[in-house]
Image (cartoon, rainbow, N blue to C red; front, side):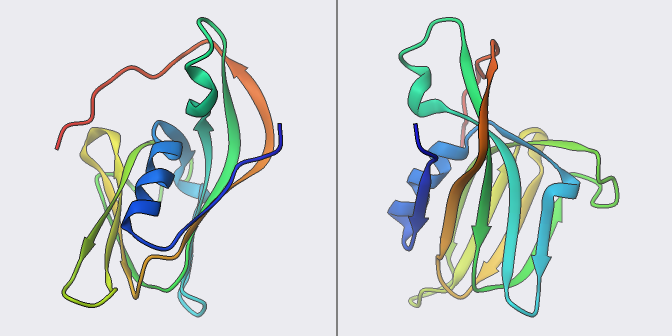
Length: 146
C-alpha cells in the first residue's frame, strides 16, 4: 500500500484528517512551529484506522507528518513544552471560525484535557505518511465526548 496523503482546505476536509489522526501518539519534541513561514508541524505515529476494521488481532501504526500552513500563533495547555520526551495522545482536530471570514482557530485536542491551539488565516492542512508501517496488537478504545 502506498502512503496516505490528504489535504484539508475547509472544515469538512479537516474532519477527514481528524479521523485519520485520531489516537495518534507523538512526543512534545516532534512539534514544530516556524513563525517566519507560518508553518506548524507534528510528526505522529498514527493508528491506521482505515485498515483496522478488517482485522481482529493485529493492527498497524505509521509515521506521518501533520502540517498546518498560514499559522499566525500557537498556544498550548495541559503539558510541559519543555519536556521534549513527554508522550501526547491526539484525539481530534477541531476548527472554530472567528467570524465571517476564513480565519479561525484549529485545536489539536489531546488526551487528559490538553490542547494545542493554532490561530490560522484559513484552513490549509496536510497529512502524509512518511515512513513504513509496524504492527501493534493494541487497538485504541474510548469515546470522545464534546
